[in-house]
Image (cartoon, rainbow, N blue to C red; front, side, top):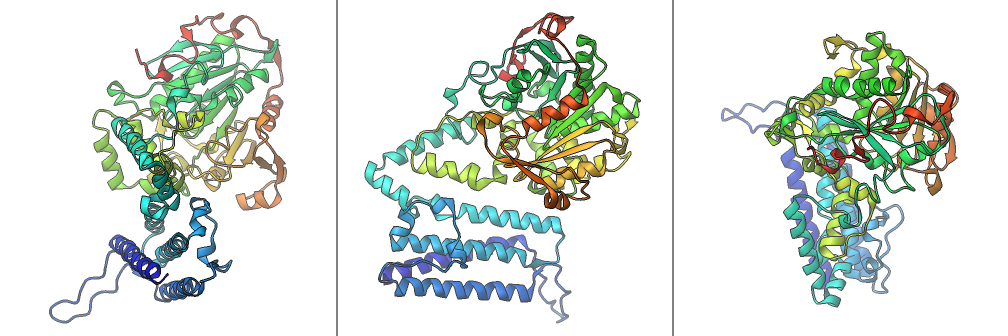
Amino acid sequence: MQQWTRSLGQAQQLILEYATEQMARAVPQPPLPSACGALPPAPAHFFQPERLAQVQADFAKESIALWQRFLDGGKGDHTPPPDSPAARADRRFAAPQWTDHPFYDMIRQSYLLIADYLTRLSDTVDGIDPHQKERMRFATQGLVDALAPSNFPLTNPVVFERTMETGGENLVRGLRHMLADMEKGQLSQTDGSAFRVGENIAATPGKVVKETPLYQLIHYAPTTKKVLATPLVIFPPWINRFYILDLSPEKSFVKWAVDQGLSVFMVSWKSADASMKDIDWDDYILRGQIDAIDTVRDLLGVESVHTIGYCVAGTTLAATLALLAARGQADKVASATLFTAQVDFSEAGDLSLFVDDEQLKLVEQLSAPGYLDGRYMAATFNLLRGRDLIWNYVVNNYLLGEDYVPFDLLYWNGDTTNLPATWHRHYLADLYRDNKLAAPGALSIDGTPIDLRKVTTPCYMQAGKEDHIAPPRSVWKVKDHFRGPIRFVLAGSGHIAGVVNPPSKQKYQYWTCEKPAASLDEFVASATETPGSWWPDWIEWVRAVAPETVAAKGARIPGKGKLAAIEDAPGRYVKGDPA
């Protein structure tokens, strides 16, 4: 036990010194006194003395208590008190091997103490703006996650045990996985061989009825004798493939919507190549969303359409609505549904930490061919949840040598798309950095200044309670700009699972509030929780906006109207074939 405690003490000190040094580099130090002996100016950046002293005192107290537990714990009970950071539940250390052996139990508790100390230490930094402070806290958390003992073979008892049992075969399999990922330049999260686009995912029957250099338009085959007269046009984000809304049949929002009696159209964006280097936001609005809306209106002979915009496409849909309002054409859209979409980026969450002048220069360098390789964007999103989306797979697939589990959502997550360089640069600068969409008249589309306050279209807003990409507090801000009737729904889970939650799964929950609420906090305080999916609530809202139905025949059948079928859904663009 003395040898173990001595070794662990040295390890703890090394980790602490390393991590503290990394944090110190992130905080500019005050200048040294000049040669003439004048006092230096007051430092602009420093640790708050009182808070720093308290954090250090707490850490020293907890460290002493930790050593005492193990020095006195000859009976094998090294359990920390419930209020100690070392007692915090953590899925990374859920295996019984972490507590069965004193050596690993001490490693686990030491790490939890150090992680708590470093996180609190970053909070004591003063004299920097809130954005810089959030970046420091994010970087500290990333460092803490990377240093977890679960990430290393010799300090992870489960990996060590597996290595002894297999004679190191697990590490050989893990090396094979790692080399394969290095070959493709992307971390694998699932077994991609189990999925075939158009067969067991993105398989809802339909036809591609229009193709442009920017998108393909898919018209899905009706499954009911009557359909709502007002069709639905879905705009997925072009930073991912559209089939997040058309995964396996039991998870497919598209199939479910068709079965509810909607005429559904899906925009399938083209993954950017060098020919799209000059594509900008105006193109996605004019040649993308408005063009698709007008195409469907003309094809079915209707005055207006329902629309859905997901994430960045929801942000773009808000701008489209503002442009249509400015042109006096707002009646082209009967309703707008925004899935986890932001229009005011003043509280845009951790993704905004990646947007500053230095990052924009890096994006420009990476986009030299005229587009940004989608793998860079995938890596960025993975970093937002590094513990779950990076280190979890490092341990399972590289260290334990586990085979990848087939999972359609993770397959979609790894099926990246490229982004046009000009659009991406302007989107990050104008919206994330400068927040121009929230300022009336600050942005113009096709020469027309837009103002979100002119939007009176009925709107259904869905936010994810645990969304780390579009935080609910940021999504809520749409209500501060739109002037039409808005139904706000807070769904359980996050950016993806909060949206893709079919009723048949009976998972999660959602919150609604029939009383007017001035803030998200006020909404939450008065909201009613409903178990399960919010999809049924949405379809009832859509039916209330435009209840008229028509027979599902003629142009309501894909390829039977003015637009002949080009090919079967899901089309070439989603498969990465631009030809």
